[in-house]
Image (cartoon, rainbow, N blue to C red):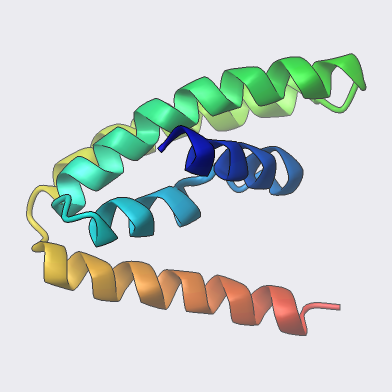
Length: 112
């Protein structure tokens, strides 16, 4: 798990995607329920994000105002999302998660 965490940390710090797009599928593959995979992923992302914040701060790559405003909105969204995922089966979660990832991949591929 720790070795996979190194890879997720590199990917998250490099891309800004947080690592959940890698961590959640791994945890699902390991047999976690959707709800447990998401919750566990967020704990790991918290630790990774703090470390990435420190590293990016050294290079002055942070807009604190925008980050705080996004974070405030994220607090509200996270509370709603945690409640919503409780009503979704793991099988349906996998399908929804895959569609979101494919949509993001297509968008990033075709965007100029």
